[in-house]
Length: 171
Image (tube, rainbow, N blue to C red; front, side, top):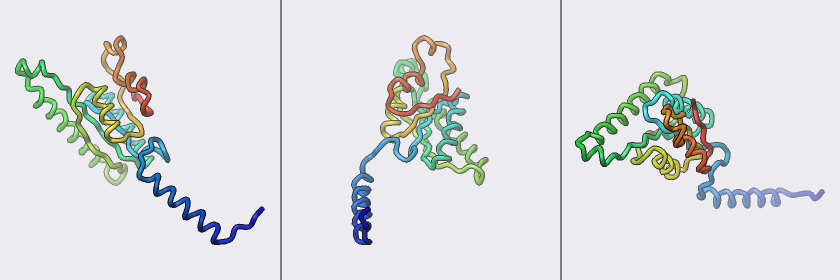
């Protein structure tokens, strides 16, 4: 075994540091645990359970919890005079209020960094866009509560089939 003097080991450390600096600026999914966990929320019981589960993951991993509400775009509803934009704004505001209240109740006991985002579109494409833009390491969604999704496929199933992130489906 060859003896390595102090200058040899210092050169190796410097080289490793330089390699780390070059890699630090490049996004790399799934290294050293998740840094961003996206959870889809829409106010349903299953989505709120998914958000709670994702909050626990984010806390344990020291990750950012990105709570995402996808605003449906219903041009036909707007044409019929339905106040779609106002309704979706109210839903988003109500979700943020619920999250803030839960955060306040758990302050000092359960701390997690979180952000709330809204994206337009249908739930699947909105969550895909959110996960891409936020550079998600994992996506957490609630199981569908609608019977029709057993036939045409739920958002959760479509996210799993996309195979772009680890997806956790919370019942």
